[in-house]
Length: 469
Image (tube, rainbow, N blue to C red; front, side, top):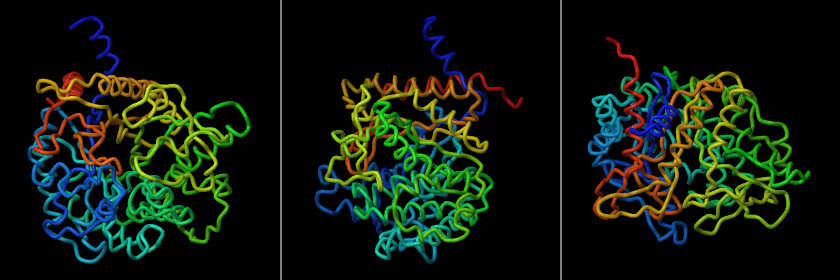
C-alpha cells in the first residue's frame, strides 16, 4: 500500500461500533406485487398511469428481492456490512391499510431479518418508504387525518411481530418527499397537485411518526429526514429570503417538529393558509422523544428570489408543478459544482454543515447518515463496472462524516444509497445508484468497483475494532 493510500484510509478511520451499512426500500427492490396476499399501493397505481414514469416502467418485478433476498444478504456479507436499512411494505402487511395483518407478509420480513442476523448484519427497519396502500389513498390519503391513526396501528403490528428480530425501528422516510412530491408537484405517487393538501399531508405524516413512536414503545426508534444545505444565489434581500423559505420548508419544518415539538413561525406565515388541521396536542405527540435521527443527504441547493431558474432543484423526468408550497416563486440556480447523473450538485461540505447545524441548534440526539450516494452512467466492460466517480463521491462524504465527528457531532453510522441498482421512482430503471449492478433482464448481480472499495474501507475499520476476548 502506498503512503497516499495509507493516509487516505487513515482519514476514513471511524470509532469502534460505527454502523457500516447500505440501504434500500421495499417498492424499489421487492417485486412480487401480487404474491402472498400483498395489496395494491399508490405506486402500483401510479406506474400504470400513462406519462407518469419514464419509459412506462413499473416495479412488478423490480429486482426480485422478494425471491432473491438470501442472495442479496450474501452480497451484504461479502461487503462486510454491519447494518442494513430496509423498509417494510405496508400493503404487504395490511393489504387495505387497516385490519388484520397478513401473516405471509410478516413471515417474509422474519425470514429476511433472520438471514441478516445469521450473517451478523444488524437490521434497521423503516416502516414507511412511500408505498401507501391504495385503499387509504382512495379514502383521502395523507391529507386525511385518519391515515395517521391507521399508520400507528400498522407500526404497532410490525413492531410486535419483529421486535425480537430488529434493534432499530424508524418511522417515515423523508416525509418532505411523500408530502410535497406526492401532493404538490405530482411527480411522485399519488400524483396530486393540491398545495394545501400537501401541507395537510406533511402534518399528518409528522403526526403518524409521533403516533407510531407512542404505539411501538420500541427499545430504539428514530425519525428520518432529508436535509439540504441551502445557499442564496447572491446577498440580495430577495435571495436571502428565498434561502430562508426553502430551508424552512425543507429542513426546519421537520426538524423543529420532530426534535422540538413545534413548527417554525416564519414557515407557517409563508404558507398563508388556514391551519385548522393542527389539533391541540398534535405537536406534543409529534415531538415524542426519539433515540436516533436518521439523516438522508445528497446535495446543496442554491436558490434565488428572482425569476429565471428552475422551479425545483432538478428537472423531473415527467411533467410536474412546483413542490414549494407558499414559495413557488423561488427558483433554483446552478452553484457551479460538478453534478451526478440526476443533475444533483456534489457538495460534501454541505454534509458537514447540516450535521454540525443539527448538533448546534437542536437538543442532543445521536445521528446516522441513513442515505447518501449518487447515480452515474455506469458501463459494463469486460465483466466489470469501473465507477470512479461514485467511489470519489462516497470517499468525499465519508471524509465529511469523519470531519463532523471530529467537530463533536454524535454520528454513529453511514448507510450508502443504495445497495443495488433498482427502480428509481419516476425515472424508472434509467438511473443507477447501486454499489451492486443489477442486470434488469437477467437479475444478475455484480459488485461494482465502488462496492469493492467500500468493502475494503469497512474491512480496515472493523479490523481495528476491539474484540470481546
